Image 1 (cartoon, rainbow, N blue to C red):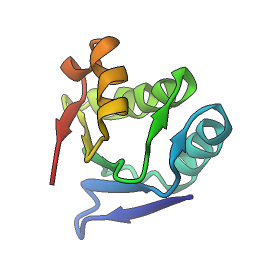
Image 2: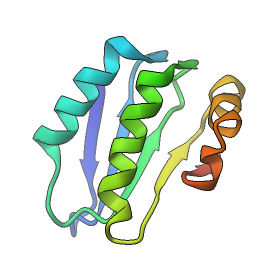
Image 3: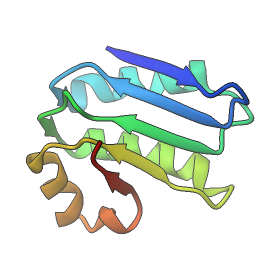
Length: 104
């Protein structure tokens, strides 16, 4: 469901979400996988949302928990390739001020 890839220096963690929903069902698994795969040197997180078509409050909460980890170092989480529905949720919650939203 999730793929974790680290840069050679372990500073950038890229997480690919391989499901069309990032919701209550996947949020607990996501948090567990992040805890299991996290490395101390991580400073930036890029999350590839290319396949995600829906996010709910549990998914947003999981994103915020990752943000808190990197915010300690003054960095932000980048959400890559969000569909319009996911972008709308992020913007409605004003989290576009917290997360970097980018398109490939």
